[in-house]
Amino acid sequence: MSVSRCDLLRRQFDLTWSLFDHHMARLEPEDFLWEPARLCWTVRADTDGTWVPDWADTEPEPVPIPTIGWLTWHIGWWWSVSTDHAQGRAPRERTEIVWPGEGKAAIEWLRALRVERLEVLERLTDVDLDATAPFPWRNDPSYTVAHMVGWVNSELMKNVAEIGQLRLLRAASPEANGL
Image (cartoon, rainbow, N blue to C red; front, side):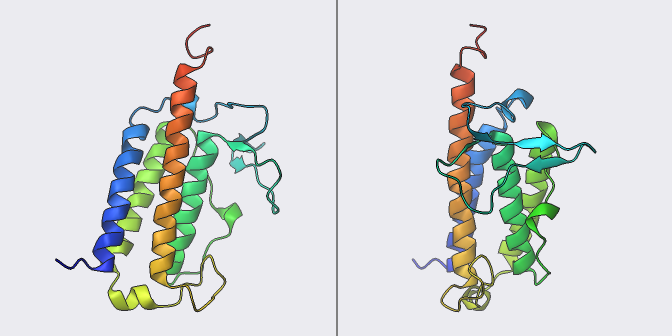
């Protein structure tokens, strides 16, 4: 049986999303900004209430541990920008992708982005997948839209594993257990 690349990428996305959905259903609002170590990247409320992610243009060494809040912003950023590219829109800047806040707001935002992502995946054809992807490789013709979609799926899988691990660590932490 032959499976199209579009079907394979969609099934890969669906599988990863189901793992993400498992963790999202169990997240508590307090999980999003929990800092498991002294060196963390998170999202912080600016003076006007806008959530701003920690960021460095050059990755620091050691790399800070991201919070669930930062990871959900990160997912939203990659999805938003790659979807812009896939739909032929001008991609938004990283600073234009605003995290809506912890708990239900973040989950609803990601669920809405998932719907938009699924609409893009449903429209892709094999011809579309063979086109050069302008993101994130700066128009290197050796990278295609198929590479971009596969990369975003892989990035989601990595971020879902990180979120799941952070959720479990917080649940097992002394402060979460009143110790």
